[in-house]
Structure formats: structure tokens, C-alpha cells
Length: 321
Ligand SMILES: NC(=O)c1ccc[n+]([C@@H]2O[C@H](COP(=O)([O-])OP(=O)(O)OC[C@H]3O[C@@H](n4cnc5c(N)ncnc54)[C@H](O)[C@@H]3O)[C@@H](O)[C@H]2O)c1
Image 1 (cartoon, protein in one colour):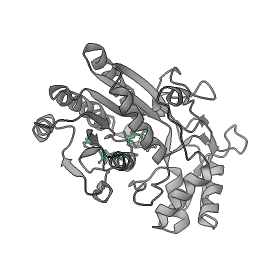
Image 2 (tube, helix red, strand yellow; image 1 turned 90 degrees about the horizontal axis):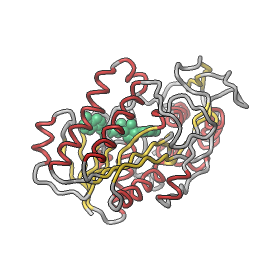
Image 3 (spheres, protein in one colour; image 1 turned 45 degrees about the vertical axis):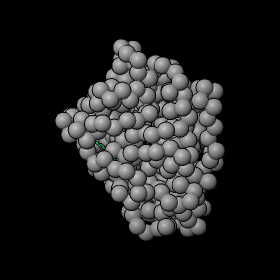
């Protein structure tokens, strides 16, 4: 099969490209390299274009044939999204409308889309399933929900099929150490803790230590990036055989506190990590843990790297490489 991967130079996109190549598919990466990296593209064919420019997008993709599209490209910094809402609506929502338009013109009718647990907002239940209410509390989450709505409407209007994958916290690195997480600025806990450990980053700030949890810190669900990549392959196989729109959570189904993660990072690094205790961040829910039963049942997906230790060790191997 021959796939287009938008955002294939980014963290999760590049790991998915790797998984596609390993199973023998052909891949073309579409990216504007705003946060992606050339080193992460592993010699794949690249179309360098910005999704916001419909004219350039159309001409860059004219005459191409793809069996499906993986759509990772988006901006995803929560604080930035609240400060620059129009930039986020332009990049994520308008960019997706352009991509859908060009895809339909070219008859690429199967989409797998990167959504986020941010669409749920403040959780009402300990485990969050797909039927949980969607009331995002930041602009980033609102753009993801708008992108989902757009795809759902397109699926209802014509013979188009799309799957939206709502990821919880992507973490870790390729086990062969060829790829890993590299964002600037980095806002994710594990890379920031490991950068503090290796001396290449600032001391880690733990945001909030008075939450109503056993150790006072927030609880999150971490899913290894290779497990996420595999879920995308299964989702594409599914969407190519099922018309319509479906949503799946992708998570570990287990919650780990910030302190659990911090201790796992200290064990992986074999040293104590410089850190400071900071105030709670606005809009950080106490706990966000997935119920990913639907993906397990319908996509026959099973995460393999569910232990926090293994996730953190792969990230440390990448950080020290
Ligand atoms: N990392 C996570 O934990 C997480 C969690 C939930 C959802 N997501 C979603 O998954 C996707 C991938 O996340 P990531 O962490 O790999 O992000 P990333 O920033 O590493 O990758 C995004 C890629 O998209 C490209 N891009 C962005 N805007 C573009 C545009 N207008 N035109 C062309 N290319 C563009 C960037 O250059 C980059 O290569 C995003 O949609 C993100 O919202 C990520």
C-alpha cells in the first residue's frame, strides 16, 4: 500500500512511518518542518508544503495516488494555543479542511487522524471512554474537536471513511534508538525529567503537589510511541474496510502519578534529578486515564510496552544517544 503521512517528520508521525516501512508499505511524508525534523524522515520521500496554503498543497499533490492518509500534522502546545487561538484554528482546523478538500479531489477516501484526550476536558469518571462528554478546556482541544467534527460531517455526506484516534500521553522512543521525542520547547514530563538528569535541560518543575491523589501529584496515562504507531496501522486496515466515522481512545488504561514517573526517571538515569516544586498549572485535571477497551476489541490492538519502567528506559536510551 502507498500512504501519505502528514506530520511524518514529527514525533509520533515518524515512528508510524517507521512501522509502515517495516511492514512493507510505501510512504510519502508531507510536512512543513515547523516542529518536525529532517533527521526523523529516514530517507523517505518528502513533500515540503504547509497545509494552510491550499493552492500550493493542491499543486504539490496533483497526480498523486494514495491508498490512505495518516494525518498527524498539527500544532499541539496547550499554553500557546490559548495565547494564539487564531494561529491554532488556521493551522489545525483550516489546514485540515484544505487537506480533506485535496484528498477528496484525488479520491483518497481513507483517513486516520491524530486526536487527543484534550477533547474530553475535565473528566467526570475515573476512566475515560469514548462516550464521555467532550467539553475541551483549551483552544488546542477545541481545534481537535472541530477537526473531528469536520471529518464526521464529510463521512456523512459522501463515501469517505475516517478514524479519529484520541491519544493520551505519548511517551518513550523507538526500541532500536533510531527515533525519539524532540520538541522545542519541550512541555512533556518524561523528556524534561530526563533532560534535567542528563544536564541538557533545566531542573524539572513539578506542577502541583497538593492534588487529591495518594502522593499529591497529577495522574496521567502514558502510552509507548511504538504501541501508538502500531495502532495506526490497525486503524488504517480497519478504515479501508468500514465506511463512516469512528473514534477510538489510545491509552495504557493505567494511571501513573508525576511522582511515579519522576522516580522511574531517576531509576532509569541512575541518579537523582534536580527539581523544584511549582504551583498547579491552570487547567491541569487531577487525573486523566483512558478506557481503551474499544480499540482493543474492534481494532484487535494490544499495547505491548505498558510498564512505566520500560517506557522511561526507552526514552533514557534515546536521550543519552
Ligand atoms: N505527543 C502527544 O502526547 C500527543 C497527544 C495527543 C495528541 N497528539 C497529536 O498527535 C499529532 C502528532 O504529535 P507529535 O507529538 O508527533 O507532534 P510534532 O510536533 O512532533 O509533529 C507534528 C508534525 O506536524 C508538522 N506540521 C505542523 N503543522 C503543519 C502544517 N501546517 N503543514 C505541514 N506540516 C505541519 C510539524 O512540522 C511536525 O513534523 C498531533 O496532531 C498532536 O496534536 C499528540
